[in-house]
Image: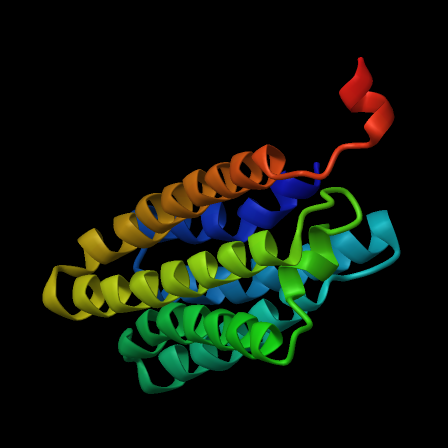
Length: 181
């Protein structure tokens, strides 16, 4: 259910874009992201920081898109969100408090070196996605960018999440009792 809520604003954005235009879709994205926060809070009695940050960015860049009637703002939002995530991961690693380890470390016990590898991998991934977004957004037609944003970047993120979990699982520290069996 929670994963469905995470993708709901993106699905609504895509559907509205296909039937109307980028500006109507942007307004729908802002509303759907706000609705996502409300429903998440009602169901789970908490809202993750990532959702709040995403809502703030969607609201800010979406509003600029609507006010100035310029789709460049909503296109830049994607790259800026990726840059924000890359910087947050980078800084957390440099100050020796990796965000990914704090989020997943209770479920997946791995050596710090492995968490560092995963962090650097995701920093690189977010930077690459941000650069790819700039290229697609400003060199190719709007239709191509929307498809790339909705399907390409989402698929890449899911694939990289699976790869990360497999990598972490491979390097998990197992209890001695599990190793004996």
